[in-house]
Length: 317
Ligand SMILES: Nc1ncnc2c1ncn2[C@@H]1O[C@H](COP(=O)(O)OP(=O)(O)O)[C@@H](O)[C@H]1O
Ligand SMILES: CC(C)(COP(=O)(O)O)[C@@H](O)C(=O)NCCC(=O)O
Image (cartoon, rainbow, N blue to C red; front, side, top):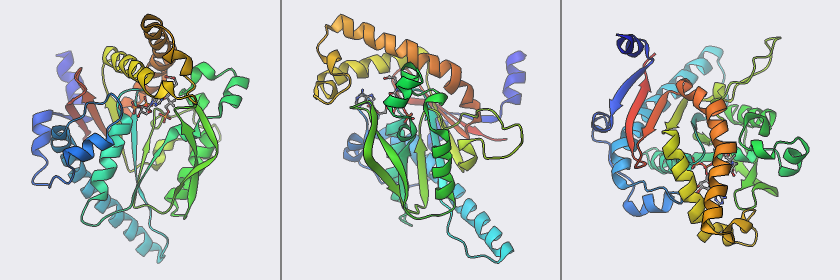
């Protein structure tokens, strides 16, 4: 009974992978297996059937939403008799560290940019808005990287405000996973895209509402559509640790790598280090800040232990 009431009250329509895949409705597959291999991140085993079963129906849904958003914006322009700049459609992608946000964002970007209208699709990750390590150290936040307080939220909001207003050449700072810090003098420029994908742990977080009612408090206020990628904690830990162990063979060997020392310790010590980083930083952040935002998303993609998406939940209310 309790489960029945909970289901009736849920704001989501729940689809199995097979049911969701049906909603592709003839949408043509524009990515090849080579494209998928090129786009997927280290340790992400995503396959071409994930593209046809999950991403094609999603791209079809988004094509309706983008069209409706443009039409709504045109109505507002007509009402005011204005000819202001086009407004990009902004998609937010949230979820834990190691859940596969970057692969999802890159596949989605490639698919949307291959629509017949050839829209300009840009992708930005929120790590560029982390405070530099020097600031995090001063504030005692080095073990809180990825937590809400480790980001320059004002800069991120100002970046989104400019993009949504249709300004040309809006820039964002760049973060390097290799050096584990913001890269001085490097920037990414976003120039009036039709669609912007913003990917990061924190994009659905709410923060405190200002008491005086002024200001724009949430990053998600800028989203036309939001996606949360969900998985069990035990699977996430396994993916994080496996990736860490693979990075020891690759990126950590680079003399510039912040994690250089972890390429040299024993396998057992490396495992303990990875589990420690996962538990102290990323699991704590998942529980305190990320997981509670899941039900704010328009779409939840739920991954199984094999990394494949097994269930899709689409907001109906
Ligand atoms: N220490 C690291 N060195 C190099 N690349 C890394 C490191 N940690 C994570 N990455 C890469 O950074 C990207 C983002 O990782 P993460 O924030 O965990 O998000 P997600 O796994 O959801 O995409 C991934 O492509 C991952 O492979
Ligand atoms: C850089 C990140 C905070 C992710 O940033 P995002 O792009 O999601 O804003 C994360 O990948 C990270 O490095 N966390 C710190 C703990 C760790 O080293 O695993």
